[in-house]
Length: 552
Image: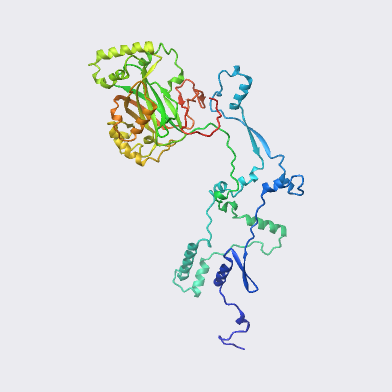
């Protein structure tokens, strides 16, 4: 019995001809929203897909249930684990060759010695054995989750990338429209032969018809599931927001002495037009915005042996710590308002400061023959002052260096500048140099990193004569503020011609031959006879909340 193409069997009329794409759209409309529309008696009632279960408030539960009353397995959650606390003894690291303790320790009261032992005794650390199970160590903690996701490969799925699907469809269409190399029709016999020749066979399934024990098959399936499995599935979970954190608690680090960003200043030479008497220098850091001195003084001596000989009766023995010419400064709060202030002093002598500085401002080395008699008289007076008042000093001159011009990339060495291939020099008048520096300041105001910058060698040529008996801090802060912009205030100060050559660079992590602010030898210190480098004590502009682990 034959039937035409238009005829259709009875059961075929009842088959749903809805395509798969329409089914997916229908399911997406019904189940894509958080509410599920379910028909009951012809009416639609929204029901949640998931029932949200509120977690138990552990603290409230423990406070309302005594440990002795609660029976069953939940009782162990309310009892404190006996083996939770562990005591560990860690060796306290000493950064110096000798411990920082008072010299008269043996003669102190025993109770005072016990109090001082806190600076030398080892650390006793209380460690919680089960702390890793707390909410602080949950895998969904934001910080730990970001740490775990750093080494993960980004996962891309087809359903999440619509653009990828469109590109894949375009490639499939292009393949269907393409033809073989010999331009044969896709449905022809020759085309099928071509596809067979260029296709690779599927891998054979060994022992597919052999009888295998159920245990062996389970073992094979377990190994197969582990192949290509992601190493950290929970790491793919996005980190929660900081506002949703259940607990914020971190394990404290081993206490250590605070240290900010460190720079090293090395004094190379100090020269004047004429050499009459010993000249001594000091370095210190000042913060103009905070109006505070943020470091101790570092004293350096660059005099020749002949000048040092004038003070030999007063200094028969010189400690090696006084020979230091390089210093390490610590800066906890870097800013664009920090200056390195350099002050020069000389041996105390009779007369006004202006009269004492006058020879250095009017005489030059080229005129030494012309002023030979006057120079000899000045040297004789200086020798007499050194013999009588060698222990006392008087202010002589001062200058300052704006550190931002050194550490910023704009103020760094410019290879196109012929004067800056080997060193940056302070040439020209003060206002001319400050006008150029003022343009750089507007760009480099926010660039202030004292930990990493290009080392620089500076030759400071402009010193200002000390006006009056003493340069007050208020006057100094006004002068430093004027140094950042062109001003007429500094023009009223008379310059003293001198050349101070210094190196400024980031301090190394483990400098050799270094002395602490208490003049203790910092490790490593291979040779005690080598000229040392001094660490200068910092006075932070604002308070630093840190435990004091070193005796001062």
